[in-house]
Each structure stands twice: as structure tokens, then as C-alpha cells.
Length: 169
Image (cartoon, rainbow, N blue to C red; front, side):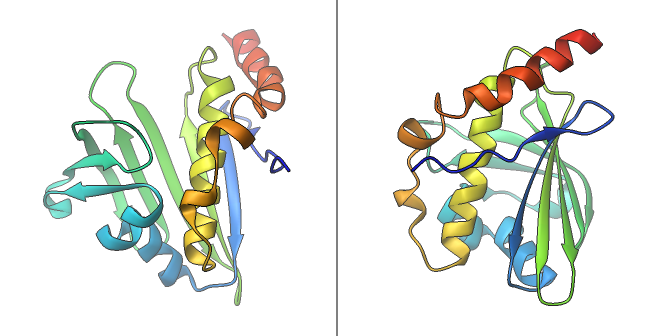
């Protein structure tokens, strides 16, 4: 069964997705920042985060070399603002962790997404967030299947969002 897509556009035209966890904000923060925990569902990083730059190697992709990752802002355990890549088309992504006393919401905001990429980027973020859920709930991130359940299966949800972004331009 294909998971239900959750992505939406906020008033600024940013792509927003969220997941809810029965865990503390500190625990979810660690899941997205601690090198060992991040490696379980997203990728490995090397370097010194205090410098504001690390190199990221995606674990679920066929990448053979790491990509630069710029840490624009880090406010543990609530906010992490990143730039993935260095080219003009680099992705700006914010992660917000909100603790509601027993449950924590992780909100991912992909700022200024390219409308031509939304139909694949949206399902991609759904995939990675579901890998995070699997890793944090005792499941296997490797059981989350991008080709079967995310793309192109979720493209129909993201197509109207891409059209909304094009209409704003």
C-alpha cells in the first residue's frame, strides 16, 4: 500500500512536510544531527559541524562522492537550516522540531523549490521522512521502497503543487 503523501505549500510557496513521533524533541534532534543516527536513514557526514560546513554522502542513493552541506543556522534542539549543494540550484532546507509534551513534530521545509522538480522532490522527502520514522520506531529503513511507493506513485499529489508554484512565478 502506498503511503499517503503529506506535502503542502505554505503561504510563501515553500514545500512543507511533517512527521509526528512519540519521542522528545532532543531525541528527534539527535536523529537528524547525530552522525550515527542520521546514517541509519539518510546519509553519513564528515567534517566539523562547528565550522558550518560538512560533507554528506547519501546512504540510500547511488552517489559515489559526498556533497557539500552548509549549516546556515543551528539552534538545538529546535531549528536547523541547511543548504544542500553549492550550485545555483542548491536546496535550502529547514528542519523544525517542536515538542508537544509526549509527541514531537519534525517539520521539513524545502524553501523555494523548483516547480519542475516538485513532482520528484516531494516524493523524495516523503521517502526520507518515512525512512526516519522506520529508523526511530524499530523498523527497517531499507524496507521503505522509493520506486514502489513514492515515485511515481505520489507524483499526482505533487503535480498541482508544482502548478501552483508556476502560477506564482
